[in-house]
Image 1 (cartoon, rainbow, N blue to C red):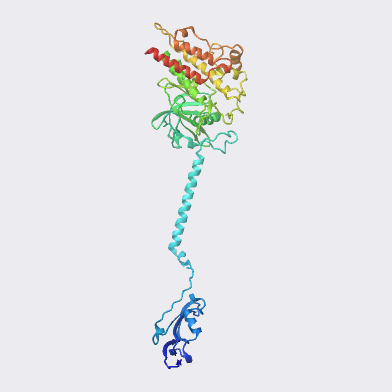
Image 2 (spheres, rainbow, N blue to C red; image 1 turned 180 degrees about the horizontal axis):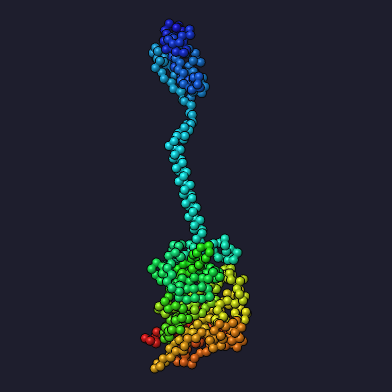
Length: 501
């Protein structure tokens, strides 16, 4: 044993292990007064490099070095080595348990788990599902692109301003005020249409009575040579705030066919009375009905010509083909304007007229039906860059339509009479007049349709005769506006009601 003896001979024993005198592995040692028993623990490493705690027990002398060790001042990296001391009883250090702080090590991932069969099966399944979803989404998108109403890759050079797609197809469920956009319908509407019978033909195509969702609709099938008219009419119908009770109700536009044939369809409301042209040939009207029809046409044209300002405003629109064949008669004898294949839009903010046909029109600036063309169109003096000029040309044609209607109005108390139906200038030009025929009559001779004397006896007819003569004046600036005609006829309608009361 390693013995420290004090002057008075008193001694205390400490347990020793790994720090014993005389090379002992364990046992006891003795300290003199002032000395300390200690227990220490520090990090050691085995042959594999794995750390483990190495504990030692022994005696510390009473000198300053021993005391300082016990306080930890001389122990570097205290978190890796710790010493505790005592001197209260013999072998007191045997029960001391100093601890050291283990070095933190990052958790290594268990790569073996990723190699397990369940994990591989799970990852394969997830990858397959994601791939399948992407394929389905791609197929749906490609089918949608193929079913667009306008296939932009085929028509960008011919119709650069046309940007209408099948998502514009609409169902007429708005209030009719024109303030709201109609709701969407399915994009396969052409497959839901059941054609019933052909009800008419025109220069643009054929009109069919059809059924859709159990309701009667009109389907205008355009000739393949008139694709531009179909594009334009569809675009005009889908103009924001276009909907009006005196504008033909638009339902949808679609294209159906295969690589060998194509049909361009325009689906609208169906009106059993047909066009004003057809109706007037088989029916006469009384003054009250005449006023109702005339006022509704003026209201529809006024709505077209009027620009509505706002974030979702409506541009002003000129029809450019007003005639009795392009006006339909409803069951209540009000009329609505149709056929917008030649229409143009005007944007006041940019002072531009949207007219995709301007560069391709046969005959330059001439547009419309020759019999209803204004003098300035016939002699090519119209300023096509001035939108007011297009509106005034519409007013000229409106005057001729009012004349057609007025001929079929009955007059007289005892003997009611009405003239047979005739188109304007029926007694001046052939049934299919050329430009020169019309220009000679309208521009050179300044001829206008005849006003019968019997109209003077009927207040409504007398007023309408004055209106139509102002509408077809040779000078466009003298003609009435559509709004002025509407207000005049509205006042006439009010006055008529007062007289009846």
